[in-house]
Length: 459
Image (cartoon, rainbow, N blue to C red):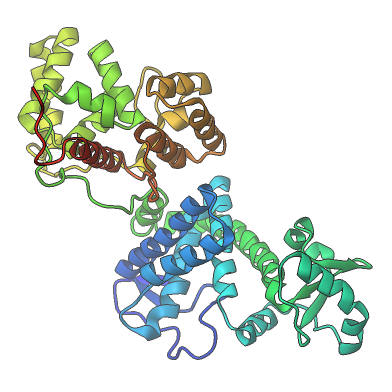
């Protein structure tokens, strides 16, 4: 597969048969740079949606609907003949993106396998059998005579796991180690080292093969990336590849929502009620030390811009704090320019965007820095203390800590939001400014319900 600026050839011309590829090898086609990045972003929205749902403990039936809905929403194409192309191209682009470290490979392998599982289950039985044949699996359906000899045992297992019992069921006999998840879940009959799996269970067998193949392919892709691709494509593809693994895919928060504006007299109260922990910590450190290093100034400054702090108020806010430490003259000389720059009033006049959760989590604060994600960068003791100050209850606090230990930092922030506001956040927290906006909506709604129109206070 080669990314080019010209029009590319189509990989398929018809949609006959399965629309679920096995991703055995990169397709022999040229891809426009625009499609290279766009298709990857669309697939990444699917994978991150799956990851968030798994982290939140969604049940299998909920996951099946969610996965298929995510796929249908994000992987559309105006030309139906291009759907398979988009699927295959996006997979191989993200294979490049996520082959580069052990942590990235582990995440991609897990989520792509989950995606394949639910897409395979959605296929018709004849398509599933065709896909099994493509894996070259040496297993054949159990003969009628053998089926009759173990039928009672198979029916017992079917009843135990709530599966329908039919007289024309197709079973496969495979070595039990090929279906570890069925064995672990006690959802299969085993005899003489072989597992008898029903047709509606073959997904477990296929998934084992798919995962094994993809795991090996990611290692090989990493070797190619290290030895050849990274150097050859350093000016063209590498910037795109490196950006995709930490890219933010949600709404643009470079401008505050309509009519949203905060004033300096309200900022301390708003910080307590609606700032996410990462911004609340920076705000409190600024008030305490009257100074922040560059990383902290950028993270907090762009966030404040996004929530509606006007440039003049921003200059007054930062000047009031910094002048207590470095003096007003030095502030105007060394720091005011960067604030105006963030608002697009200096330099290239770029209107800079507030940092997303992904960008904040991937940052590496040094000694004396206060930026970054508290859920990732705080010690457990400091995180517990910070959450207690936010009045997160004991049970919710333990849930948050559990997510942090499993590196689900954004989910930990989502649980904090829900504990503080007493309201669910099904979409999850993906951006500090989203946290702020959702918080303000809830608080405004609570204020409206407690003071409905037409009521008057009694004297």
